[in-house]
Image (cartoon, rainbow, N blue to C red; front, side):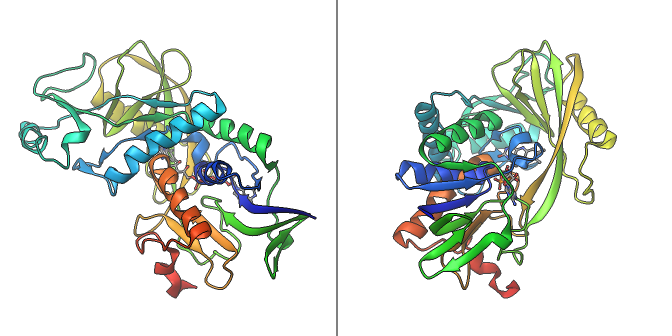
Length: 349
Ligand SMILES: Cc1cc2nc3c(=O)[nH]c(=O)nc-3n(C[C@H](O)[C@H](O)[C@H](O)COP(=O)(O)OP(=O)(O)OC[C@H]3O[C@@H](n4cnc5c(N)ncnc54)[C@H](O)[C@@H]3O)c2cc1C
């Protein structure tokens, strides 16, 4: 038997952030992950943006989450000597003159000022449909999610143990001091399996929400993410951009669809007037929760068993901060905020 401090199951954005928190605290860890190629984390465009939605409002806890995520990803880049975190401005064209006026007023409000670079009152970016100008935002950017996950994988391999295999729930046993899995004993196990039901947490209301993105090739060059209806985020190759994403509430087929490609193509044509060629398409399932808050916490009967999922559409911005919140709960008994604690769904248990 080999004794470790933690077993982490799943290494998407949730499991990677948890592993980072634990490695930074010099914990002994085993991470079990079987990549599927279509995990939400690997296909995500990686966008982070504090002002979201049709009505362009500040996202939940932005003032806490955004400063934190910058520090977090930068620290992982430094530790792993890899580049995957790309802060850059984000441009949101206005849909009407009223919206422009509204933002002229709102940009002075202390709650919004830190996120606003410029309120453009005239067309600002050639190739983009922005007759009423648009809002150039700060503290945005994108994460090359696959690059990040691979970098963390390398770190885990160096300082911990990575088992690239499927976790078998039948192999998990409770012990007086924690858990046993195969030849490992641990004080704690943390399930970070995205939409896959975690052992002991099948009662949590995680709803898979399918999304698709396309890849395009274009000569359009501008050092900003463009986002209205769809987003346009730099891809990995020269001239490549990712365009997304769809929200397919009634489709659970594990495949790309022509309908999603047409929807994204149509929305992109409404946003831009430069030529492009569609070169690829991806799909995945987001782990969403009815109240749109992460699911963080400890099993009602087994304190050695914890869960971290429900990152929905915002895994890049939520996982850094809430992985720390979870580890502070497990290591230092810091109580969880009720909004994210799985305790709120205990009636389903
Ligand atoms: C099309 C699309 C675009 C998106 N774009 C963005 C974006 O721009 N910005 C953003 O912030 N978010 C985006 N998201 C959402 C984001 O991808 C999710 O919030 C996040 O990836 C969820 O991470 P996770 O680690 O909880 O789950 P997952 O990514 O599903 O990771 C779970 C991991 O656990 C592994 N696993 C599961 N079961 C087992 C088992 N039994 N044994 C071993 N391993 C197991 C899986 O293989 C996987 O590696 C997007 C999602 C989609 C679908």
